[in-house]
Length: 123
Image 1 (cartoon, one colour):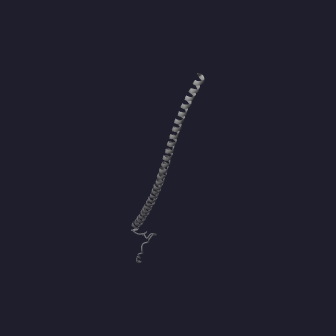
Image 2: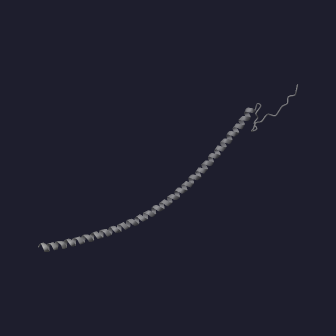
Image 3: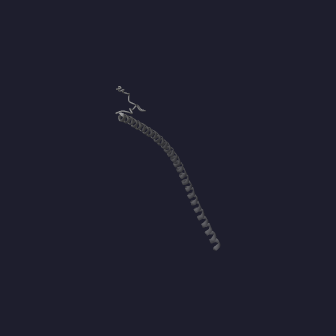
């Protein structure tokens, strides 16, 4: 009889034994390593995305704050202009009232003169 020659086990692409009794265990270890690698990559991608979105949200918040400050300044400026216009309108209202009083006095004087004139000619 010929002597039995033991050969080293065949190894697959990732170093796992592809023949022999430990074939299933080797494949399981390779699959577990691949699963943990995928989980790690997904976790890193998720954390990177969360960090990126957090930065974007912070940037938008700062932009909104600056726009709010600009808007407040414009509103305050318009309020000052409006107060100026209101005081101008009030001054014009006083002038109109003075002119109305003056016209009423003139009309009263003219009505007295007209009454006197009519009395002279009707009399």
